[in-house]
Image (tube, rainbow over the protein chains, first blue to last red):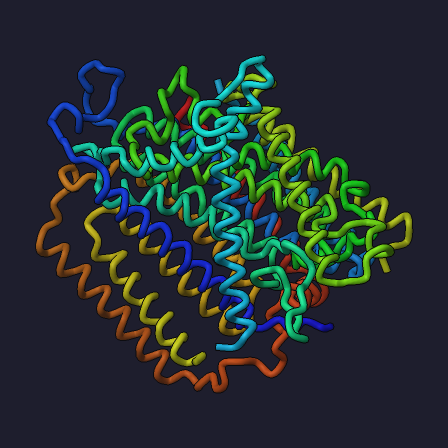
Length: 123
Length: 343
Length: 165
């Protein structure tokens, strides 16, 4: 039974998405209608363990998080590059291994540099 | 509408129901397991053995007041849990829940859709899941929520890389990204975990981190961040966040069982039973037994291992698991090359 | 059927792309951009370029937009703190953007018609075929791309370390 890969394979996903969104929307509306609504100024303040809230919550945060995000993008793209290779691993043979070896060595060089520079050091 | 499409729609709804029921009963299971491990009784008031507890919790979630803080961005505040829930519910589309059933001479596969890039689909959905947490945490306009969201998202993206690398070694062996084919290749007890023990361990650790489960539950670490990214949430919106976590746990257990533990294949049984439909159903039951075991494993770990510190978590992800999974790729390539599996 | 899906996806892509520009809240812009990316991924699926569709979702919608979101959260662009741009600046931006559009439309009008949207070989966009092409015919560009990655990593570390020192 040879399965033909066609765009129509994705149609069930659309159905699933519609069912999921339908369920979520219904639940959201239902809970909105069912719950009591007794609002007061103090209740709607941001929670800060009972003490008066200080300033804006959207403070600039550590650049470390940002660096992790940049490195994630880079590594994610590299990993994506490896998928077509892994699928064809058996057919590509020794040439394929050599190709990926060079790629990996360069990747690991960059990785070593990142670690050596302490870019991923959290204090 | 063709009969195949109607069957698919029914299958989707059935899987939804099963997912939701399992997620509901995971909350009950978690409390019972915790109670068992800590020598307590656990919930026992609602129904016999507290079996109706999840229903009561569900009703409670519906009836609670919705609180949307004044300082928050209203729409984004609502959108956050919706994204989290949608992504949790979308992953099940590519998991083969069983072989195929034949009804009235037609054969229907117990999988919503068998796409060519099934594994990448799972990754895509997981990578979108980050937004649910980030948007919700940011929209709350609360310091704890923002910190929790940041921690959660950077933890999730860090472990996604190691997870991708762990899967590559598996794909090298299977030569396909279709989840169905990977499951079919493991028939007869030929489980991938035997050939990929290291890959399996890396994947398991990453699955824990992706689900924000202990020991990686820093995003909602109560002692530092109150409730993490869902501090400001109440009513069903909080319910969605909690629910999404349990659904993710269920789905990761399903993915682990399918990729590494043979999926719906039951070794040795095919010899004794000739009815294909019965065989398919038994296979599905076997898959669910494995899934339930992994869900139990998630809970077992939660009540056994304490929480990591944030630097330890990041070090484990970047300096531990990524080099380890690259080493795993090298080892796999070397062994396959030596054993002449490479042309 | 395919044609109507195509028009729907195109409409969605263009509408949400417009909303990216029009939205006042930068976080909304990011979310609309994600919808645009999904619509484009849908186009890839229609062309049976399944791997590209997945890559588009994972890399653009899943990775790069997370980075954007981080940047926007870090800069915390509120409507109040946004500097007021002068009318002159606004009109200059409109003229520049309009010129770009005219150039693009002109280029598209003169380019040859693509013809049938589906390639002769339906399997050409699948991961297996793509991998063979990439790792046999385009070996050198692939290895060069890894050098590019190395440079990007070094650059990222340089950017990130500056602040802490």
